[in-house]
Amino acid sequence: MGDRWHVEVDRSLCIGSAQCRHHAPDDFRLDSARQSHPAEPDTDAAEQILAAAENCPVEAIVITLLGSGEAVFPPEE
Picture (cartoon, rainbow, N blue to C red):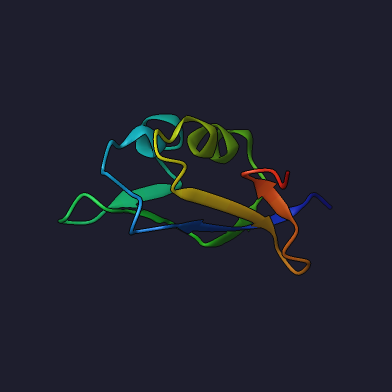
């Protein structure tokens, strides 16, 4: 069984660039204020979700391992 992730979007950082939708259109939604939300906050690990986080211009997407809370993105320093 693969990893499960918890995906969050920091709404105080999100600028509505929609890069998350570009990289993972099935995994993120934009609301009427163009703020991003994960379609499913708890989800299977997936390359497109990681790509969305890595390409967010303001690093508003945070991914942690479900259960342990260990950082997936951004990586801990």
